[in-house]
Amino acid sequence: MNSSTSPCSGRSTTPDMWEGVIEYVENARTIAISGHTNPDGDALGSLLGLGASIRAQFPDKKVDLLLADDGSIPRVYRFLAGADELEPSVRHDERYDVFISVDVPTLGRLADSAAVAKRAHGRVVIDHHPTCEEFGDVTVRVTSAAATAVLVEELLNAAGWPCTPDIATCLLTGVMTDTGRFQYQNANPSAFACASRLVDAGAQPARIALEVYQSQRLEYLHLESIVMSRIEGRAGGRVAFSYAYEDDLRSCGVKPAECDGLIDIVRQVGGTELCLFLREDEPGSVRGNLRSKGSIDISGIAVELGGGGHAAAAGFTFKGTVEQAAQVVLPKLEALLQ
Image (cartoon, rainbow, N blue to C red; front, side, top):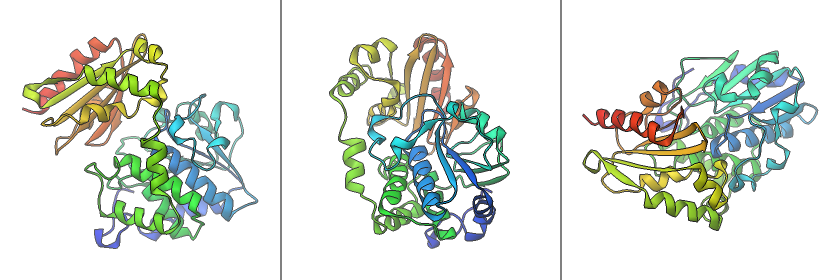
């Protein structure tokens, strides 16, 4: 599905869009839920919020909360209720009745959780990314939704499942992080309406802001200063670019999972329209983040490089060096401006 209701409704879905999802969950005895590899606030908030609500509504069901990677989640999201119950999917070889994917456009982005999805009797997909590859038996995909957490909140409302203060805080974390604290172009009326409902349900926006944006480690701030010092402009200042090497992360004592916010440092440069941040995770592998501050769609570049995302925010992984990635990507950004 890829449609939306009237903006006046404050919702991006209608109750009938959720009938298949609700039926799958109600009929399942065992359920696994997973977000994408290298999970961000939306993937984690949606996963934890949905999992907690299903557990509260159906205490007799087995509901496992899985990580697509065999590692830890970013430190800033560990305050979310249920975060300590997340388990790497590689530890689970069960054949679940239902596998629910949240915030994942393709099987490839599920990483280790893809095997769990393939074994399941049924697959449900809840997502807001555009894709050419549908892998769910039931899919609710609304690309106009600001975050997958918005869709999960609408599912809970349509199904009549619980939305406790802890659940609401998980979901609001997804909405706040995917809209850049409501600063990005995707902060539409339904996102604000959803946030209002979640705060009314007990979500704590002040705590989310404190934990996610105002509790950075000193080591991360040192890395941030390095990235800031390397920012350079291209195309007469319309493109901003910076980068970090693996050695930078190691010397500062920062893990790749902590680095999602570094693109926002580059995005702050006044007068720029397009932004690129490159991070070397290991020799020969570079993670690229793209941002558009206006109407120019950068998702095509990410897709061309094997990644994906939205018109204003996308990413990719490049096999090579930071310098090689810059030589490939920067001309593509400059070409978009023409």
